[in-house]
Each structure stands twice: as structure tokens, then as C-alpha cells.
Image 1 (tube, rainbow, N blue to C red):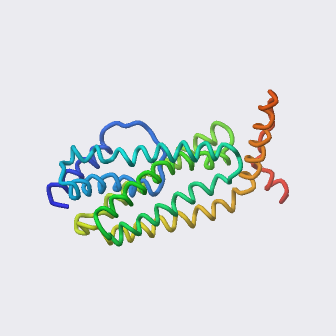
Image 2 (cartoon, rainbow, N blue to C red):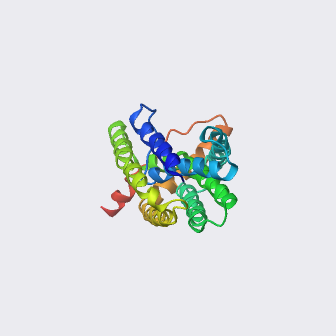
Image 3 (cartoon, one colour):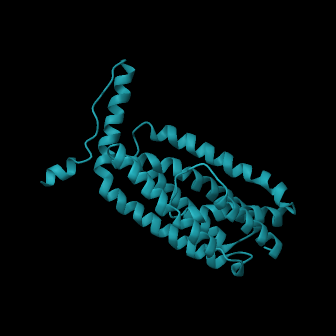
Length: 236
């Protein structure tokens, strides 16, 4: 990355923090995802000898891929046959593998492919993570606080990501992606630990979902809801 390119992408990054934007879910890996977009633009320019403006078109595959992933896994998840935590866990494993390619940097083409895949999965991760996140929230106040708190601490990723991918690690950012792999690895571990605390609610939610689907085919409705405190009651 040349100094001019670095100054440009740095300006682009901080501009999106300063300018008003629509609210979206955040997580500790959000900063890494933001850099993937910046890194992709730079890689496109280096690989295809195009300007930053022309390279914007090469971000279309990642966006389209994310939409396809969201629709496909959304339909699959809506059947109630697969545990909700499995999908974001699978996405993070794929992202970790792609970061391994970015760390090794076998070739520009290989890195471009890994960037597209990682970008698509990281964007779709938010959509597939939210159904699991809201399974254990209760009431308007509790749900609002949980979502707001998660969005707040999720912004840490943006601060860490901007410092992690420093220009001194250019052009391949090997050190940066190595550290990023560590962060993703910790996220995978936390995904598994959190699943251990919420598995009962997930099982009950999916069971009720299948019952509602079967009832809908008979033009019937099931008004029952999942009791997220059932485990606490049993311990008492």
C-alpha cells in the first residue's frame, strides 16, 4: 500500500465514523470487518491496476455473496431443524480459515478470493447471529438494554481494528492478520461457551418453531412461548 493509498483509505475509514450513518448491530470483530473492506479496495487496485473508484465495482461480488448467504441460511434456519449457534459458529470458522490465507498471502488472486469469502461471511454473520442473541432476552426494557449494551461494547472492534492494521505492517499485513486470527479464535471459543449457557432455550425455541409450522399447515395457531427461566426454576 503506497502512502497516498494509505492516506485515502484512512480518510475513508474515519469519515464513516464521523458522518451520520444508519444504526446496525455491532460486535468485537466489527473493526476487522471494516478493514476487510478497505484492504479489499487496496488489493483490487494493486491486482487489476484500477483506481480506487473503479475498484468499488469489485466489491459487488462480496455484497452479492453476503445476500445469498443470508437468504440461504435464513431459510434453512427458519425450519427449526438446526441449532441457531451453529450458523454463526460455522461462519466464524470459515472467516478464520480465510484469515489464514490472508496471513500466508499465497498470491494476489488467492487473497482476493479469500477477501470476498471472508467479507461475505462476516457481513452475513450479523444477520444470522441476531436470532440467537434475542432468544434469551425478555421484555421491552430488557431487550432494549441488551441490544444497546451489545452495540456499545461492539464498537471496541472499530477502535482496535484501526490500530491493528497499521501502515508499518504493509503491504501484506501479516502481523495484523495473525493477531486478527487470534481475536476470531477467541470469538469462536466464546461462541461455544455461550452456547453452553443458552442451549436449553435454543432447543425449546426450535421445538416450538416446528410445532408452529405444523400447526400453520392445519390453519391453526400456537400461542405458547418459551420460558427462558425454566433452567433456573429446576435448580431451585
